[in-house]
View: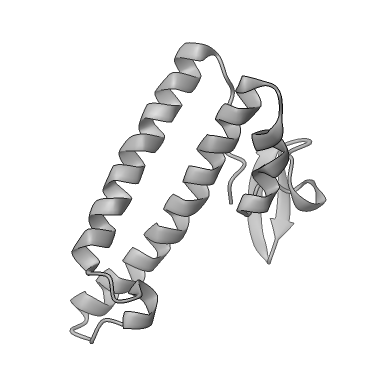
Length: 119
């Protein structure tokens, strides 16, 4: 059962009882720490997935800004990329996306639920 919740003026659709601050979902890496330290492999797997998803979404946001700057003919904001070539960041995002897909396939095969709790 899904329930709509508000977080930072954005709507978040997560399962009822989702973990994270104020029960709204996983919004940062700290929210995954209990799962990572759990004795259960399923929790460790979920933590790995959520941590990767959080990092992927942050990188995607940066890459979108950089791509927009590039398309608009603007100079790329080097503060966003910490002097790393844009093409390398795009490649990193691509590889992380593939890794997330592998984790999603494993979750289905191993019967480990990884609901979309990341926002």
